[in-house]
Length: 159
Ligand code: CUA
Image (tube, rainbow, N blue to C red):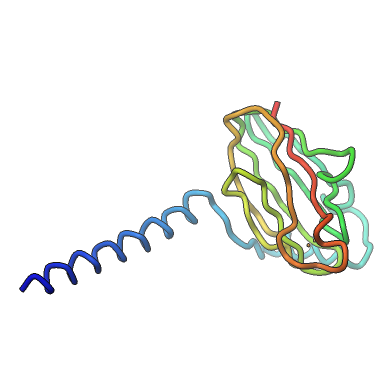
């Protein structure tokens, strides 16, 4: 009889964990975007075409407290993001990162946040987030992408 109660409790816990994980991924809005616009843009980057938002990647203000950050990942940097071109966004704003790759599969993760996605050539990965705390957040590639994978990173400055 006690075993049945414990079994029931264990199943409840497991269901609870799954629900939490499911809620987490929905809440952060992580997902692949393969609407035709994104596909065309990403393929254009690979083909070296012009006239896409990824041609001149960077932060675009779309409205009050609404920003889109276009990022191109390539071996072994994020543009913008790496070196002396940090991604700079205001605290408290809704920020959507649209990230594509110009070569191989990369990762795009912002340390201390839920922002974490794969970056696949020919696709646009989209992650939305809001930074409430100003500061400098580390940006890392978390998918092995070549010999200098471990050096591929950058920063997000929230001001
Ligand atoms: Cu890019 Cu690892």
